[in-house]
Every structure is written in structure tokens, then in C-alpha cells.
Image 1: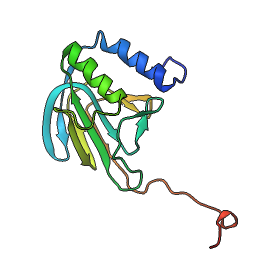
Image 2 (image 1 turned 90 degrees about the vertical axis):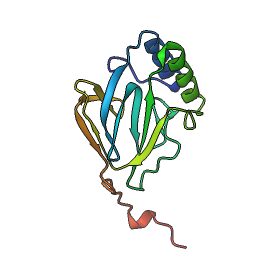
Image 3 (image 1 turned 120 degrees about the vertical axis):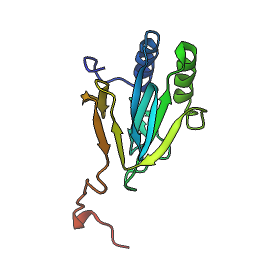
Length: 150
């Protein structure tokens, strides 16, 4: 998606569907919330907000200010299974899927080498990687003149 202009949810969905047709899953090995994991990876997402990809609601339980990341690890299941998982994601019905590894965590380690890593829609590098959250890292200043007195 790096070379593409900003896309809507429909544009991301179409691009994702096209990519799935030739997708070759790779093993993801690491530790999520201190627990070892290893699976053929379709997608693994760490989120502190509900949405990404032009408005796809990937993490319905995420909260910006609770100090945790929501982690969704979706194993690859072959072409038909991957398409099914993708459709469930689009329909916002993926959270209860069997096989989905959901955890709330503060730190994760991806040990598999050379997996591409994306952060907020941009290519951030490749694994191995440590994923962490920095609670209350964003601070907002509100001028007193804009605060309504009750």
C-alpha cells in the first residue's frame, strides 16, 4: 500500500482481497503477553484504537487510554479459510472466530526474522521486534478559555 494514495475502507478491502489470492503464509514465532506462540500468520495486529485501513474496525475492545494493546493473531487457513476470515473481519464479526488468538497485553516479542512490520499504515521495518505500549504517552493541552464552566 506504500505506493498507493490514501484509500477508503472499500479501497483497502479490495486491495486486501487481491493480495489474499496469492498470499503465502509465513510462520510467526514469538511471545505474546509472556506466552509462547507459533502459527502460520494471516495477520497479527496490535491496536490501541478500534479502526485502521481506511475505517476497518479491527479492535472493537481497544481503548486509547487504558495502557494496553489489543492483540489479534489470526492464523492462515488456506485460500478459502483466509477469504472467510477476511469477510468476517469486514463484517466486524471476527472477534469470536475459532482459532483467533486474542489477548490484551503491554509487550510482545516477534522472533521470526524478516516479517514486514507496519505501524499506522506505514512500513516500519522487519522483525524480529519488540512491541510495547507507552501508557499516557500522548498528552493534550486544552486552553482554559475553551473549557466550559459548569
